[in-house]
Length: 404
Image 1: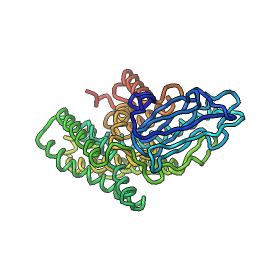
Image 2: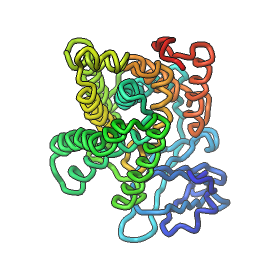
Image 3: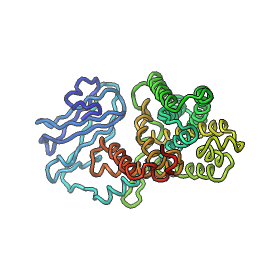
Image 4: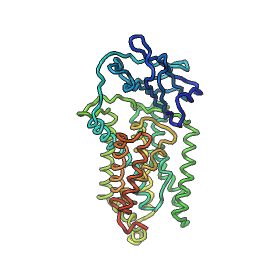
């Protein structure tokens, strides 16, 4: 099925096509499953009586074409190149992808190996989710705002790396540094131009939430206007997973992503627990009126929280672009519900609760694909959220007095 629900036969309306033949010993094989994925598009088909297959795609780009070895006759395997091929178009609108078949024993992956690989992926996903969730949680704790535009802060970081690293050809380290600085500046600018004036006018949290929804839509479609609706890759996003730790296959990008996430999360924990500004942030989150009466500059703390939240969201978006992989105009919106689920699951307004909730959501999302179709994995995480809140409405680390 294509991502929009269309079948492979309906995709013939597309301008670009991948084609191929599947034969064994000169004889065509009928009913062999072929699937394609890339640039935010998915489709699948089967070979016809002549062993031919064809899949249309909406745009040129790099795609992964996979032959389903379970649909091959017994004793027949993909002999060379593997069952998954990376393919792209040349100067024409058609491209051929062929698989070389031979006799052999099909290698299957045990349930334990699949579980270990998905558990690792889930921890990695949960850590990058935590970066966005902690920023959202701090903003909620200090202002009471459920910021739906947080998704666009996530997207912004990845788009800036795409702009400076891919489009302008800057070194990747410089592009990431500029992207993080611009993300922090965006958080400062949004608070200075929108949220602080609205707070001073005494606008309620419901009205502020509606403003955040409007801001989210405005930013998202601005991204689409300037960057288009296609998915682009950041430099190094498609490195092979050639590092093996037991049954787990990972790439250098995976290791770097987890390392960066852990270091940044530890730094945030130190900031909140050991620094004066961090302690003031926790005080404002607990009781803003009492913090103000104690001499704490509440507006100054909130400004710092917005800068920090946007910075963490931008970093999360960069890591999410490598995890997916790919950068698109709505990539932050795709995980917004998971970020909200992590914050709510851990406990509203608690940064450490957001971390715990993110890890639970990330691991569950990846492990659920062992039993659920990949399209349903996000639904399972939201079901877990509902079940936890039925028995502990304040969340895992939340306090009862914060509810209501």
